Image 1 (cartoon, rainbow, N blue to C red):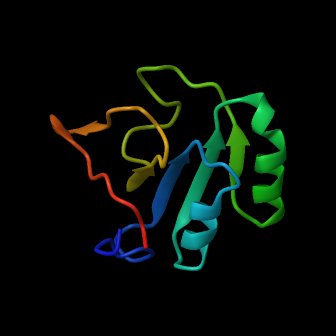
Image 2: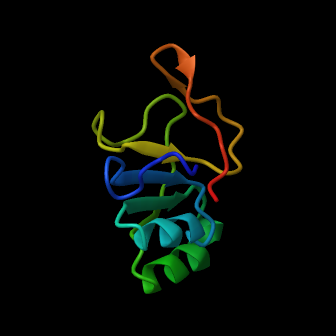
Image 3: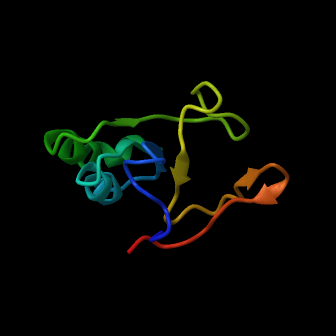
Length: 99
């Protein structure tokens, strides 16, 4: 997402289904804080790898309607391979690949 000013106007990111948190690592170098999470216990080794690299990460089972964070905590929600339709203000949110 080259038009996003990572670390300036966009400082907090939720990375859903993070894998080894490579997106979190990408943003760490750009002064943005990423909370990465994996949805299943079978991803424990991937989360451990992210934590060892200094990227905040956790495993969690989430509900289908509401995340467990207060509203407006994150500037961006990133989900590389989710089959979830993300809405904001009645419209689809931005869907792009970062460079």
